[in-house]
Amino acid sequence: TDWAAAVAAVRGLPATARVLLICHVNPDGDALGSMLGFGLGLRRLGVRQLQATFPGPPEVPEPFRWLPGSELLVAQDDAYPDPDLVICFDAASESRLGDLVGRLDKAGAALVLDHHASNTGFGTIQLVDPHAAATSVVALGLLDRLEVALDAEIAAGLYVALSTDTGSFRFEATTPAVHEMAARLLATGIRPGEISRQVFDTRPFGAVRLFGEVMGRARLEPAAAAGRGLVWTYATREDLARHDQPAYVLEALIDSVRCTAEADVSCVVKQSGDAEWAVSLRSKGAVDVSRVAMALGGGGHRFAAGFTGRGAVDEVVERIRVELPGALLAA
Ligand code: 5GP
Ligand code: MN
Ligand code: MN
Image (cartoon, rainbow, N blue to C red; front, top):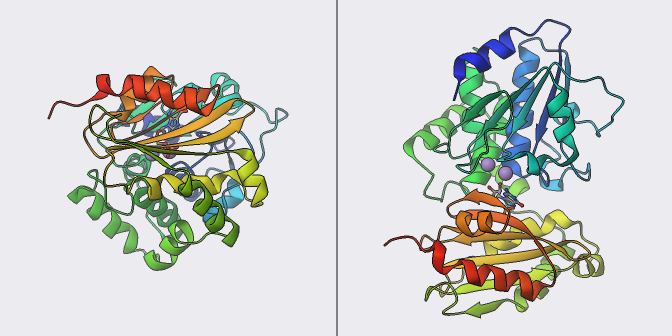
């Protein structure tokens, strides 16, 4: 983490500088919240030519549409001039940036804010802290060093990021420092009850029915994770179409599946193309699922990881089974 270089890169921007904020594909609360919260901070510093975008379909998932700073979001357009500075949020590798890699390569400088241990070190300046609970921890660290005063609009995004990546302050990453940061954010007047309801506890009735169906086909394999149990299910595009739901509603599914007491590892396989699947993996601690994901071309954290799988669902799950014994952590 080169704070001095990051501060210099932002402070050294001329008034006319173009800054482009980007984050990973299928953006989650940390990606969008860190990006938009930090973006508003840059606004306060006087950066005027400021845009934010992400790869893939431009729709922002409904739970995040209310986020302050959403007005910074633009659809990707090759006609935009190359930015002087790109700032990238919550992406462990360039493969998570889709077509935006080209924008990053052509920018004057690329500042990377992230917290994945698997971060590949891309970009020209790295602020990568694998001990940070969310990318927003890094983002606030930089805003503090830039002497940007926190306000409720900046805090909203950073809080969404922190609360989503810590599973509402339940995961092991929930350190005293996380609660201290949450306290600073809450002191700006943001409403945690309202935010949590929007982000975690609101979904269309069609999604409730869809979840019922997809949960109903979950499989428990008691011995698959080297004796620790694997629970998995899958959802197809046809499932989404039948219930008239957008793909992002499936992001919450893993949190229901991973409750399974008999399983250490949980898995949701979500169709993302004709024979392409976005796979989410979670572990309760016996298995390092980032090792499984990395072996299969993806990445993530020890207890939350993912990859893109190809072929039939059964083939994708079989590949996971094969990797599990090697990913078992020493007790
Ligand atoms: P989720 O299951 O919530 O989509 O992702 C869990 C974690 O795994 C996140 O930290 C995310 O960055 C990582 N992850 C998910 N899918 C992929 C992928 O296809 N490639 C890589 N490199 N990381 C992924
Ligand atoms: Mn993320
Ligand atoms: Mn994150």
